[in-house]
Length: 499
Image (cartoon, rainbow, N blue to C red):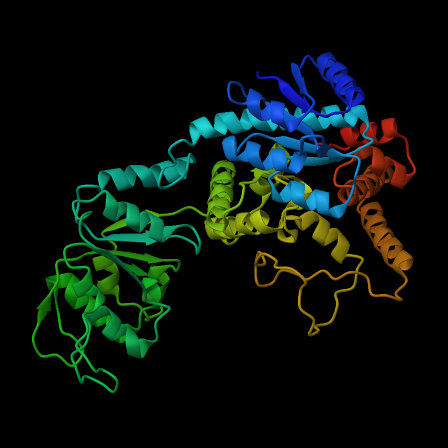
């Protein structure tokens, strides 16, 4: 492992950190100014860089910027005796791993550096593994089955029906089927049949002749003609109007169709891939989907699993989407802690991969630090906390005020909105009433060790809240709670809050 580089013009700071890191068996190299650091980087590179913010010969913020240009993934910890907002904002905007105000607690500083080292080592492994990202991600057995099916269909022209919940990536699979088929050099044309009004859908699919209807000033080629020789992807086929299903069936049967207002038959050599989140067998039984069209489409069926059935893929997908969002926004890519990834993996994601991508985009914009911890995740992923608060806090009535910052989409339309306590309401009575209610339920149910169970919940919530307020600084959290440093460390371990 490469050494930790310490940059500070204060000899006492360098001495204290050198000794503390030596006890952790971490190699250290010290510098007194940014100029020497940049010169050393011509031939060497640290595992982690810890830099003061104000030094003769340059600032830590300027050093951070130059270091990130050369080594974007290098964790940089900025420390300063000037704990002002501008410095903190500049540090994080520049891509700092963490911001460490002076004077600092030495064990806490060592713990932070150790976290940065772990993250740096993970980043090295991740960079090697993701040197070439695949077009689709998935190690789960269900996704491997999909990949194998794409491989078996690679030389085929057969019609494919892709099923799966909304947000599972059905269009990505359709694109992969096209890309790995003999038609790859020809167009891939997609149309969402549910997103286009019925009166326009026929023209979109088959085109129209000039003067066919009001506003048809010119002849227009439809999607079948545009996809000639290639692939036409019909998304949400289950919502196609019944009368248009008949015309689609004709095209699938003999490749022939008429433009709207046209009299000459047109032909198109098109491979059709359809997708739906609905159960087409049920739609057939309900009489809203043609049975003969269903059998024509259902030659080969691929089912995409929801994200909750492939939880092992969530960490890789989350890291990929985080990097993608950073690239789109032109900012430094953030990183997840193992605990944050574990929290993501436990969430059901009713919106599937699309919802996970939206969450990662939100985190790229809103997460306060470069390393994302569980407390940084959006409210929708804190289901346990939301339920607990909802039990004791009244839900505010609808009002016209707008949120102060962008928030991610809710997990589901029915997700409850948890409001802060209303001024003037007796908050003490509210939470005590909630505690009494839970205790009564447990006692009446004959649950064992009710005292210990509720005490653990109370302590865990208190410590979690204090750590959230202090952004993970345990000593400050202990001071705010009025307990000792050793006590909070022991309680965190006992209650499993490190996870």
